[in-house]
Image (tube, rainbow, N blue to C red; front, side):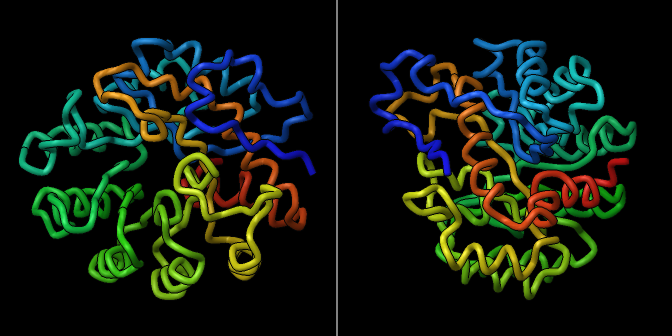
Length: 298
């Protein structure tokens, strides 16, 4: 089985991209449920260039969130049905810092959902022990909008266990959630409890690659036994995305452009690799069918 593990991030920063390019291979259609088009990516890559990369990789459709949120609509205009835009509460460049304090977040969300511009809400980030809390009024009212317009919420929670996502899913059973990054650093045992207790939560595997959160695959880049058992036990509950952002992996200031799209192909190859080791019916579900069904895409 081909190993698509990247070089350490410190070396990546100084090596030409050609060194890292994965070998060419036939590509099956793939639904990428976690990509971004942020202001600090737009500085170095255009919407048209992103669409070209998605097409080359045979991406059937991609869930796009953006900072500011309107950039997801710009990508939608360039990519058409290739792009499934979500409303991000980060409505300006520094929106991650104050979104939960502003009524304007809710006004823009409702306007976009009402017009049908957006097919979901998120990515919304929480870190245990820091503001905002998950019972924040703006977030709770975003969930009300998600229920009213029947759209899913992409939620990112960095915490030491599954308690926070389970609490949210139980308090809002009529809202559909996508749990980003399979909980970040959580183990398969934590995610099994989420799947068991939260019928309204789908788990996605973006950023569980070896260069960011990790913990999903072994040295052979195939699922660790506990993750494999979980996926095979619940093949209908998992989604996959690439999350092509890169600054989180390097010593870099946050005012610099994010070259994450330069690594999109490598991230996608990593996920295609471990998925290819699963039974064919499960491969199809994780690569495409689950996302199509969950998002209601014909």
